[in-house]
Amino acid sequence: MLTSHEIIGFMSPTLGAEILGWAYEKEKPVYKATLGAVAEARHVRPVFLQRQPRPQRHTGMMETLSKPRLEMAASTLLRTWLLKEKKSLLVDFLTALGIEHEDGVVDDLPESVDETRLRESIDQVLAKYPGEVVAVYLNAFSGMNETNWPALKTMLESDTRLQLGEPV
Image (cartoon, rainbow, N blue to C red; front, top):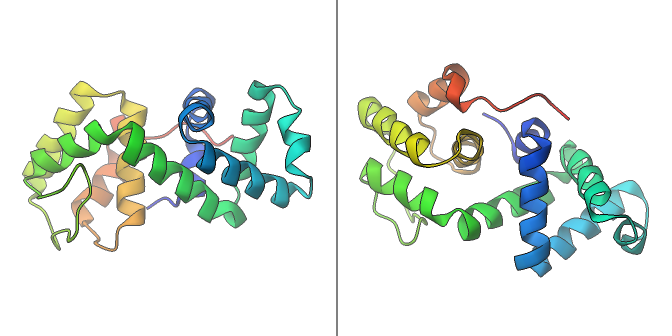
């Protein structure tokens, strides 16, 4: 089970840039908080980072967000991106599993899920969405929820379609 900072550390630079670009364009408060957390971790003022060209800034931000001390900022960024930008993925996955939800948000997850239905649900979302995005979501889902589904953990560890890239 990967933590949020580990997920960020393993995702491709392209997806990392997409997530930060989305936050910059559509979710200013999250972007500003993320920038502030990165600046604090680097012992610089946020304006120092803001003066960098955006591609360079975002590359450096993702590198810093992959550190354990930035877990909260990494988690907030990933959660917000998934819940607001990738809501259809969440909805499709939970619906395929037969889990009641409200726009991809669940009050109470079941203690366990049928392994066959889980595999089918994952196959469905992989057919519809980019594999890396699905892998990020499922790793975040597994890591951020209190419920532990052994079948999901096994699939995340063994299914090559759900593997994230090399660390940055």
